[in-house]
Image (cartoon, rainbow, N blue to C red; front, side, top):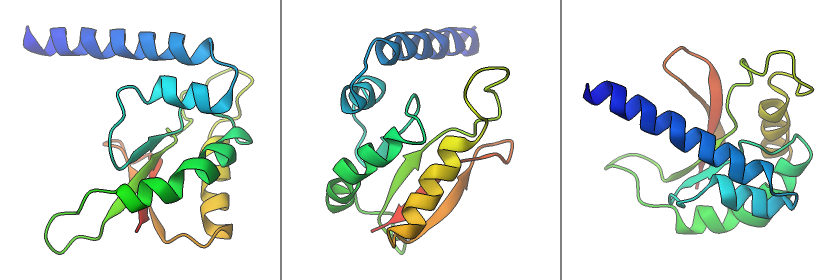
Length: 131
C-alpha cells in the first residue's frame, strides 16, 4: 500500500513538473520549474533541448561546483548533471539521447572531468562532474 502511494506521488510530481516546464519558454525559467525544489549538487536538464542545455550549463555549472556539498570520506565532490536517457522519447520530435550527447560533448570540449551515471537498468542518463 505504501509503495502504491509513493508511485502515485511520484507520477503526480512528474505530471506537475511537466506542466510547469511546458509553460515556460525562457530557458532558465524552464530549468527552475523542473528543479523545484532545488537540490544542492544537482542540475536537472530534463525539458531542455540540445541547444538550450548549453545555456543552462554555462550559466549555472561553475557556481554549482563551487557550492557542491562535500562527498563521503574519500569521495570527490561532484555535481550531478541529469539529462535522462532519452530511451523513452518514442515517436516524438525529440531524437532519443540527443540531450545526453550534447551535454557530454559540451562537458568534454569545456574541459570538465566527468563520468557517466547509470540508472538501475544500466541506461546512461546523468554525468558526475568532479569539482
